[in-house]
Length: 429
Image (cartoon, helix red, strand yellow):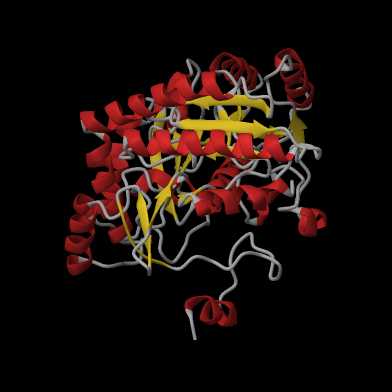
């Protein structure tokens, strides 16, 4: 029995229909920006394996630190106990986060980091004797797949089966494409009620929403408005953190800083799952009490896992190196050059770049959406080219490990152009 047959007998894959999809590709190993199948053929990982693998696969420094840690302390309950890796990582993250951040709460992934943030924001006001339970988010938002995270995400195929079970939120326009003032006005109309606990957003780039991009200036105005109405702001930097947008955090482009941060994905360099929610001194002060009722009753079995923290500390070592920043800059410059070239193609509706992310929206008969049927055509084309591309419907994006070579980047760009040319010849519009 081959890999595919064995897989299909026992595995349920994420975001994958049970029938009618291409069989999964078995991967034996990975190194740098490459995945290797069981035939020894390599595949360029152009999306960092779902945006997590920042330093490249199998990085020896991270592997060494993980190996050392697992031999010393694999895990310990984090309620009533602590350990050096968790403390050291919190210290290093707070050095990188804005000055207003004061405490680190550990969880398991991006969705749980968001859950912690939402619960913190709502309970913050309860602890202060106020009742605020409303949340504001962008119309195209995506914040995860747990119920709180789904609630603050856009109504979409991801949430359709559970809409009646999610809580109601307020939604505003993305402040882009001429909607800056409308977005601001919509936000203020909700804030005036005094019922909003927090505004949650993906700073500068909305990932699963289609790699939609907007300017720091517009976000500054939205955050400033929240401060005017004493409303907390939550920066979901699960995807945008750790140099993805060109700076260490996307919020580093802002002059007005959020109150709460959500981190995951690149935090361990894509090696182990780990989530982080940070908060300001002011937010934490509402929980800093002898009153047990003011405790944040939230936790996970693997909260503060020492091995995951060790992986994150090793990843931070690499982020601190000049070579990392240079690679980020190199990728950004290459993306910008390619953007100028590809945006002129008749089948390209839009090409946009922020930091190490480039997104190309392809013109099709169907509107832009995750369920656009051209998606399977794109995946098949790039797999033939031995490139891992997982488009968001008709939006092709490249978000590579920082170690990717210039030659591989140009091969990816040439392949995108070749795909557009093939589609144009077929007149598959």
